[in-house]
Length: 151
Picture 1 (tube, rainbow, N blue to C red):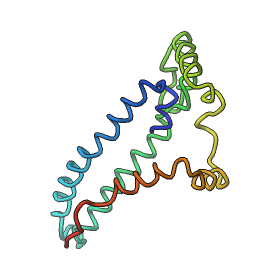
Picture 2 (tube, rainbow, N blue to C red; picture 1 turned 45 degrees about the vertical axis):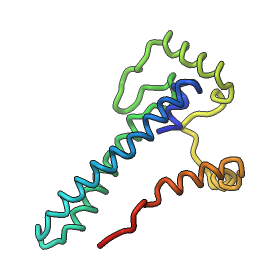
Picture 3 (cartoon, rainbow, N blue to C red; picture 1 turned 120 degrees about the vertical axis):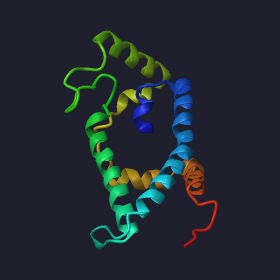
Picture 4 (cartoon, rainbow, N blue to C red; picture 1 turned 180 degrees about the vertical axis):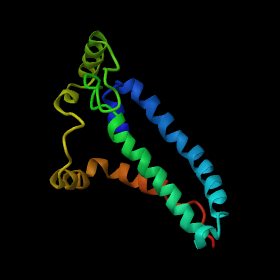
């Protein structure tokens, strides 16, 4: 999602969008905890325990949203047509303006598209890059639970 946003917003606009994106994480955690508590109460349906329904429903919802996102999210501002959208989201003039803004902000954005596949060599190269180890550490610490897991 963040990679896709980098193609539509310049560096000044992107920081606000990313901050909003990550700030919704806590809201999502609250909602998912409430949903989990409600779903776990579905005990004994089809002789399955509550945790079974919890994992089934949450994983199914995640899969469906991810699957739809593959077809919904555009590859770039100039390539917004897809399976779901038959027409472009923007006029040709708007596409040109957006593309020029992005290339003026960061010329490297013209070298890639989201349709390029990730290969193992590139993933390993990213893991070995010390300049982003801080980001890996922050991401790891962010998802560590603040409280111990209780039964």
